[in-house]
Image (cartoon, rainbow, N blue to C red; front, side, top):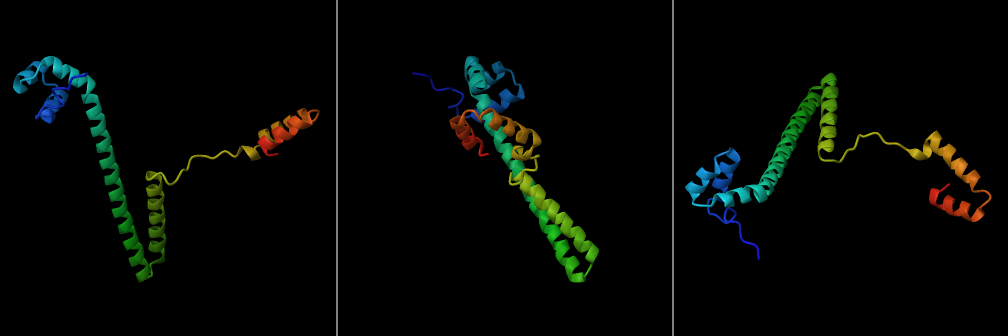
Length: 156
């Protein structure tokens, strides 16, 4: 049966972890909180990295939400400019505002993972694939059963 980590169950766990991360010597922390140095070392090695990783992930989520909130604010401002420009009949400003709104929407879609602008390769239309398919079909002519099976897989 494994022991419960004395640092994880300590009432001042967060203060202890803050000192560990801050580089305070284990001897000083142990004396201040009446815990064993070995417990501090074991906690730092086995449990602190998990806590730090969770904290880092939570911080990244907060930052991402902040970026999206700022982006939404900018979208709102751009839409306000667009509405005002349309109302005043300023054609050039309308077009600029539309362009800005479109860029903001594109950026938001990228951030949310809804837009993938990586290059797409369509192998079925590539000349290399057409040539290879023709060679496979030619090689299989003496073997009609195999040709039908391969054609079914390749859909040619």
